[in-house]
Image (cartoon, rainbow, N blue to C red; front, side):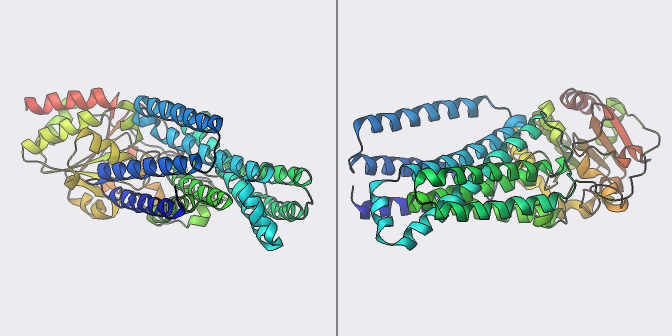
Length: 476
């Protein structure tokens, strides 16, 4: 396969990836966006494999490549089919770690055993060799940081690690020291006369970058995990682009840059929605609880409501807003919630859904759940579109959400989430919170909403509670 054919095929694959990102920007076109992405990746893998085969790749190497692709496809398809929506954030995080690890392995293998073509090219000038060494250092550093940071994020999302941030004394100084040490080691690596002499330095860079990845993610609060997942997505993209530079693969560079840029833009958008800067999140500024004062203890009377009483209020209501959260995903209640929505709409009730930017454990988590359940796209509203409508709403149903409806974010300067925009559900005539118990949310802080005079609690499993509510509403 000649160079021109490969370039054209890579260009087509790049266009398909761009179409994929465009399709994923809207719920209505997300399925087609996935198809474009799959087509682009299949084309890229086939063209790369054929080009390697036509350039003298041994039969053993081709067999190894083919078997690796087959095993990866089988394992990936199996995991994707079995994973529940509650486990999707963990799956995304662990996949990001694979990209980071791949970038590290590519950098190390390229340094220890460069391809003949690369060796001839680098031997032409000292500057080209130096540039290649810099590419290796950057690729390995970004890859190691992505790998360890994604592992920590996976452990936090899985519950193996606490969602509370780890705040070491002088952590910013520690981060700066690690970064400076990596630069110093990179200089020693570039001056090494032989690969064996440079190997200890590049391994040291790998270890320091991995340590930095662990510390950066450990210092981020649990309420910030959707942004962390988006950031790690960006890191994995830049890691892939770095590997593309090391391998001189144009498609890998373009694809990695697309993923890295889109992940960065999404992270910035989410941070703006939370009234935070991207740097404060990256370096553990949100959800850290660094204020010198402590949040005042939350006290008051908790009011419970029965399914029958709530059903009557819903049957008499004109406007209802549903606020879904991660608890809805855990209870697998999205289908029941959609059934309740349809029942109320058949009675002439205006029902809408309010989505907070960081609801769930990854960007768009609630949108995916609701789309899976068949909720119409046109009644799903983002926070900025619906927040001003709560004061004219008869009933708000908060299903499995906590931190995103916490009024402490607006009026308690000692709260770790102070300054984060939230859904102002307490402005409605009645708020009903579906919850198993009075435990704090993922951020680990109390919610004063539960003690408001217009707030009632409906304790129990969200799916069972919603199913009972559907039956009671139909009986009215």
